[in-house]
Every structure is written in structure tokens, then in C-alpha cells.
Image (cartoon, rainbow, N blue to C red; front, side, top):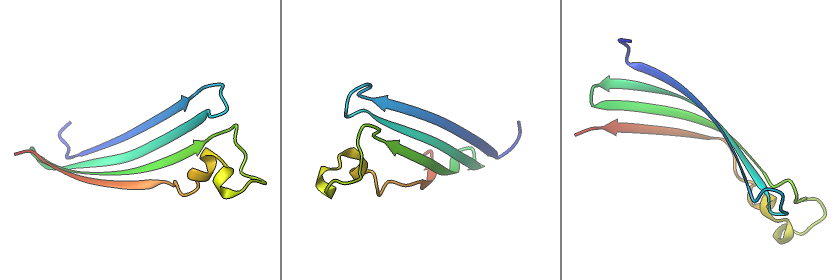
Length: 88
């Protein structure tokens, strides 16, 4: 196609340490668009929906330092990425 625009989507899921107490799952959905200014320059914008879970750890009734991986993931949220690519 003769267009300067591209759209993309990507879904991924990873589970580490399966069936152990430290098992954790990461899920990600990325939606993005690329705009090609010319043959050697493009701008990419992505929005990533992220979800993390350590299902064998509970955060209720424990001090913050003892809550395991879920306590570390509290501040993790979705993110936006912007990239400019220039080929010399």
C-alpha cells in the first residue's frame, strides 16, 4: 500500500516459576501507530496496557516489607512510548 501510516497491535503473556509459590504472570497489550515522514525517518507512538500478578501471594494482613512480589508491583501501570527513528 502507498501510505505513510502503519498500525500495530501485540498481546503477550508470560508466566514464570509455574506451580511454585513465587509464580507470577505478566500480561501486556500494545496498540501503536507509525508515521513515515520519508524513507529514512519515522515516528512511532505506542500505548501499553500492563497487568502483573503473583497469585500465590496475598497483600492483606501483612507488613509492607513482607507482602512479596505484589507489593513491588503496586506502582506499575500502563505506559506510553514515543520513538523517532532516523536512518543515516
